[in-house]
Length: 200
Length: 200
Image 1 (tube, rainbow over the protein chains, first blue to last red):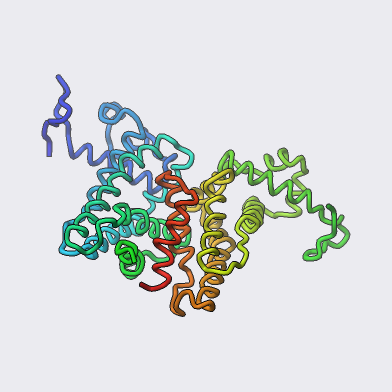
Image 2: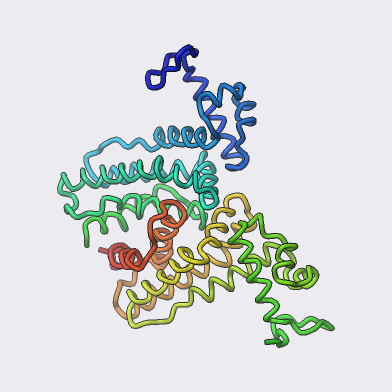
């Protein structure tokens, strides 16, 4: 699919090729999973995506811009949560999607990003601003709908999903290696998050 | 202090110099904090500790053996928890020590280790077997004393301290950068762990 990009028209340039952009982003994610953050270079991305380096640099001014754009699009697609008729269903749906993201096929991507963060302040700031704040927004939405339905009190911590739920999943992924499966997600929601949200 | 080591007598060798061992371990930890796991080399450790490489290799056959020995001794000293008269006090004491460990002066050591784990199966296995299992043992002890005192029911999850508490602290350290202070530790214990342990 080829169409002009409304957001950033480039005078005199060819219309942006969205499928080309997708291929380049995908190449960056594959290299990240295979070789870690250090192993992602614009040269390798160009080779893998069969694209010219000039094409890549016209679209993304730096490696970090490309990696963060690819990651953000990828996680947004993966972590879409539809509104449901209960807070529990929405919590389980989100944490299941998060567990799939970090625990299965693409899990190595997130592990590589997290492992690069301590030594890379620019990446750390970008992950916090562009990816983590979106998780906080998701968490607030779920808790606020729970408050509106009367499932939890108005003082329920809006960050609960992230502060507790993703933390428990990430620790298993990054440290213990214990399974992150449906039973674990339901355990987090039923035994830890919901009692905490209800303020008991 | 120089004394023969009872655990591993070496026929014909000089008695092991414990203060020398300590200096070498300390050099490994400093290099880990400053340069990351890749930056720890036996050459650098030898220079920093003013020790011969042969001396180091006689004691530790490999870099990973030295790093894990240094880490294990360091965390054991830091994470000693005295028995107290309530489960809450013991939970707060342990998590405060853990927060000090990962959140302050030496925090970079743990961040570097965690960040190396995804790409280093040998280190990952060693951390899980030698460091994480000790945390599980600590958690079981605290929960079992709580059960014996009647503070929580007999079905309380023995892994609760680690599964929830350290996870919440590590996520702040590794990802969000939010403060890991006394207020956060009390929040974890009072709002999340204890309600979960009481099975409400």
